[in-house]
Length: 218
Image (cartoon, rainbow, N blue to C red; front, side, top):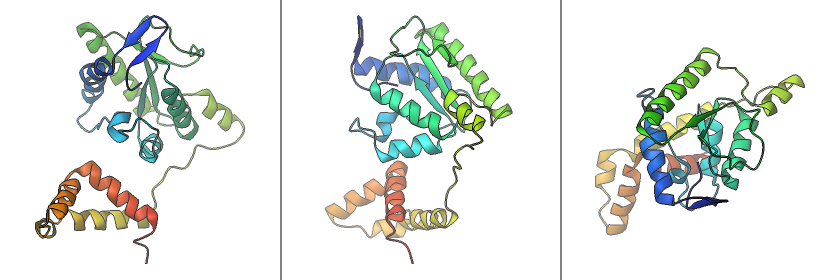
């Protein structure tokens, strides 16, 4: 989904209205499918509006990516291309009646939605069906890029975590979540660090950075 004020031709929508549409329509529709689904929007990952390494990680590792194509934001299409290149389970949505896309998406399957009460119900039903179809056929190829790669005898990217790195991350998370250790932070600067570490997403980013940097290697 595009972030910030968006305009294309005669169409315009403010950043606040986009956020409201995401919270009240798209996010709610996805979360209604299962309590196990965690929905994260791009600007919840990168506050600067840039395409950061954290967004790359989400595009690579997320089981599903839902892309709203209603407004032709370059970042949205770039992120869609990256996702198509690494794995399947990408669901495209767009507002009904919008014709803002800079290229032909008629060959791609997408779900149309309306930002209304009945539109919310319909979007929930169609997204639930799309998720169920992927669960039934997890290897289903959903874009031409991967289809072409497979026709050439190539394989899906192998997306797997390094077990040694995962063990180090779990150990670091357990250490940094230790209440006695956190209580030892007494200075204002230390308390600020403790507050940062108390946030699960901040903790994930910090631990990922420590492990990926190699500072924790033997």
